[in-house]
Figure (cartoon, helix red, strand yellow):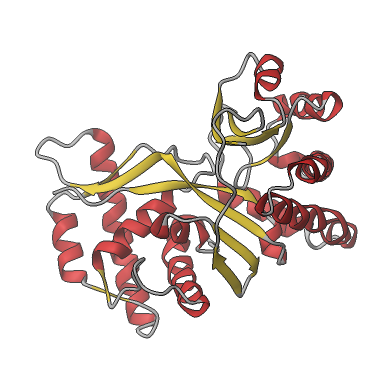
Length: 312
């Protein structure tokens, strides 16, 4: 048995902001993927994944009982497959902000949901929101509160524009130019990030009036501008706003940035060689970078491995 592939995702803009109704832009990242599999000779990872799937299946059974109108699964097949060794074989790094649990949720929904909404339908806003809601409830098994966006992106494998909590749409993004100098890249922090503690810090900070004002007047403002600039291919404005966003994040989200990256972050702002921002909830995993000149950024960050996500 081998199921279809589900890809990782990158939230280009909107981390934390979407909790406060900023815009967001999420794109599939096909470099990493995962699929449901069975094996005659399972590895230690496969056995651990299978144990996790057993707990997930139990959770989904409870979810279906408590919210029968939300989603229904073929639980008999799911449990049977899990009991006979099914696991999620994935190259997506966990705790890196690229949607490892999202791809798993998408794979389970795709295979076992009854009356599922498919990619081939006319994806109205209502259907997208319904899917997002289902995925949000499914993924909350893995890390507390989930927006449902990661699995949605993985399931549909198309860029998704978040206008607000209740307004999302599939979108097109400017075509990549592989000989372009500008790039979006990933920087590996070498540290695994935990989503829940980072979100808790953020929620705690929200109790502070000054922090809330900074979010509204700076963080959300620049995030929304970056999304608009990117979608319209206005790269000059994009870099102006990404720089502002990078500064705001460095000044106000320090706990989410691994300490050894504070200097590198500031250096990008000072030299304009690149601008860094959080990828997912931060605390480790990947850091997202934007540069107008990829070769210059590579020289500046020569001690690090850059993974190019998008070129323009």
